[in-house]
Length: 492
Picture (cartoon, rainbow, N blue to C red):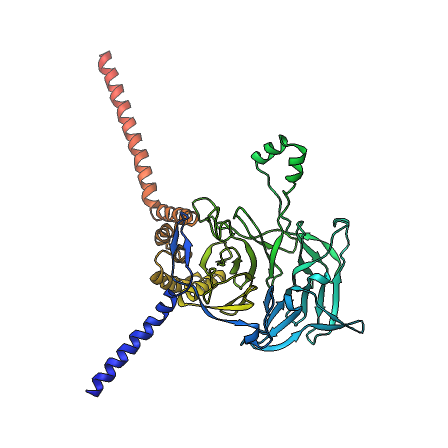
């Protein structure tokens, strides 16, 4: 009897444990969805779920006051630009206070920050702080001593009345510094390793429609003065990868492109996926939105984090959503939302990644929200990493598991198709590319399959051609002989 009870109990426990992830996923306080080839929304399993939030009080530093930036260093320390408290808060990987940086020695005197908006930490733990209301970038060594200050950039390309108020900052392996500054619409400000201003990168060209050109032509002088609002948009967030490519976000009211990947020359080299019926998948969050009411308008992208292997995530302030793309511009998954429940945001302003965790800083709540990947999210992330490394074959098993959870996930079909294509199984590749709605790779597979058929049947084809030629020759010869015989009979 006791044995039966134990067996039944074990079965119940196993059943319950199997259900836990599903319950956790189904109970997330936001919609998780994606867009198919036709642009239709379909709902997906959650790629990430909330895993708690930490306030300044909970971390041990006292309440955060309007924090504006967060950064995870290579040693997993978490740095928070606690803007309203004029300080930088340093937490360990368990979100517990390690130290507070609110002052430093400058020329023998104690100096302090004034509304620092941005923070970046190098691999050797140098701190680059966008000290906004002091109009400078402060660089501190790991021990908190002053390394240098970047301020008062001068150049003929800068307006005489320009005030340097840095908001975001990153630096590359050569210690070149890139800065997003307040009211600077010409692009991201670049400085050399000595802190000298060298110019702008990533300038966004303004395009004016034909309608707008006609309207300007017939406008009065007063109306035209108001229309000088056709200025490039300002950047909002920065990140940089190990190769020195700068990822930058900007506001795009049209919802076409709100993230760029800038090479050292300042050129945008980000890839855009063409796996969409309209031609290109926008790199700007939601593809559709309401024109009025709450949460209306295009996604307002305020920050970006590069997560390695070509994967990057962007943060939408308007609807509090996180959109993740691969290096080819494919939208991998969407999660997050606005609200008051755990896992939703009031004013999301910055995003970071710490291994498999994603951290989002909410300035209104003064909290860091943590999200962890689900099995669904893990499978997609790992498959994309394998594909990025060129190991399409190993990714196939992961893509198949993704399809078990989400049979509508077109990228999984495409991933499997690419593996078959690389293995020379072009007919199977065609089938998966058809299911994944990837016309480009379907065409490639089709041409290879056609060439295979031609190659396999080349002997039969040549034989058939020779037979046809011979038959035509014989037929022609017979006709000539018959014609000659006919003429002879006519003469006789």
